[in-house]
Image (cartoon, rainbow over all chains, first blue to last red; front, top):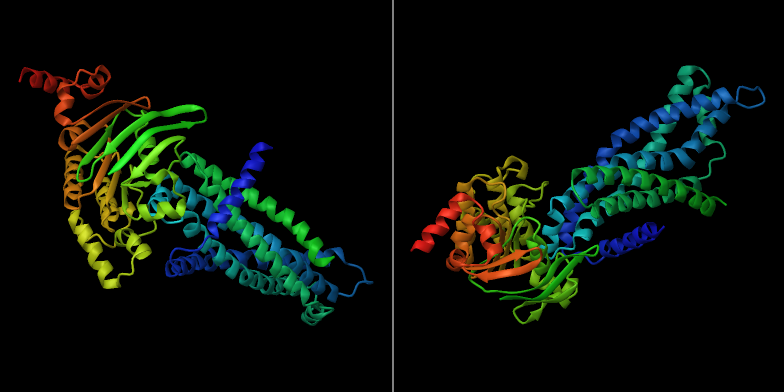
Amino acid sequence: MFRFISGFGSYWLLLAKVFARPEKHSIYYRQTMKELVSLGLRSIGITTIISFFMGAVITLQTAYNTENPIYPTYLIGLGCRDAIILEFSSTIVALILAGKVGSSIASEIGTMRVTEQIDALELMGVNSASYLILPKVIATLVFNPFLTLISIVVGIVGGWIAGTAAGVITTQDFIYGIQYAFIPYYITYSLIKTLFFAFIITTVSAFQGYYVEGGSLEVGRASTKAVVYSSVTILLFNVILTQLLLS
Amino acid sequence: MIRAENISKSFAGREVLKNISATFEPGKTNLIIGKSGSGKTVFLKCIVGLLEIDEGKIWYGDTLFSKLDFTGKKEIRKEMGMLFQGSALFDSMTVEENVRFPLDMFTRMSEEEKLERVNFCLQRVNIVNSNSLFPAELSGGMRKRVAIARAIALKPRYLFCDEPNSGLDPKTSIVIDELIKEITVELNMTTIVNTHDMNSVMENGEKIIFIEEGEKCWEGCKTEILKSDCKILNDFVFANSLAKQLKASSLEE
């Protein structure tokens, strides 16, 4: 319990350092652009693949579980749309990114810590926490909403292809279903969740890496912890945000 | 000049530094020697402020460095350069970017001026045609030299070296020692070197502090070390047979 409270306090102290005034804006801008490529653009591939198959499976599952003449088939499209927008594109993609981006952040910063690169930054008078973490936070906050939008589109396309290929729904019914009773706020809800999740992934993982002590074994452990802790925090915030935003 | 007064530092109840005081003079290569685990690196990290001290004071000239906050320390840190044990070059940056980093961060120099300074520093440490290489592509000795180039990029007043010879062959060690000595004189820096390399001690030891189990046991220069009758120091310095022969011949003289 004491360790948890102490860790929680250290996390907030680290955030205070991260959001201190940057030393030189041009350097931070350059770093943010680099992080946009490494944390954002390089996540498009995995997001697309996962979203496509996720959409396909949701459509097929909905179809097999609503095999009843009472239910109109366009409900399959509607179910696919709502499941993807409300949960899958924000939460599941965030959990996948916690694995990919989170472990990469923790191991990168952790390695810098154990090889004294962070000490070298501090010794030069650079706020190492801000220099290393702030560009990552900004990059994920800017780019992850685009990943969510890509995931929504690709997921729905995946659902349409799988549904029509399996013969469980026609294209007309699917399109009617995804347009039926559409609430635009769901997109806003999904994007708000994405912003929270992006912040959690980056800061929790960076925290694990920044305070590593020891060698390569500890860096590996920190990387695992980063994935576990950020995933659990995402799930917890998913419940809280759903209650706050949809109730 | 750097002055450390009554420095104590503990980790989880274990006292690593016990009331150490020392003065480090400008234009000289000041050495901190002692066996592995004696507290040399902790002492050096306390001096540069990477570790908070439990008790004591650290002065840089007339400024009480140990009482300054991060912003206050930042101004003095801009005048520091440090060569870390593992070089601590930034993996994701090329040699040129590593040396240019402090210039990018703290100066308003034009791109041409920065490049000129980077090339000057790299030439000074005898690194040529390697600007676009990454640290992983360099040998241990080259990494140390690039780290020295980065450390001197902002023309610091203080240079700190933590085990500059560790992992290097004797010949490369001598090159690094000579480089540190020359640069110290050129820039009139206050240089503090942590080492247990006896060749460095005999080459560069203008002022030597010997630490044993967190306590300062002896202070002097390289000529005095051969004639010292401090038993712990003699056990450390003359641990190998070559050094024992050197001691014997020096006493005969």
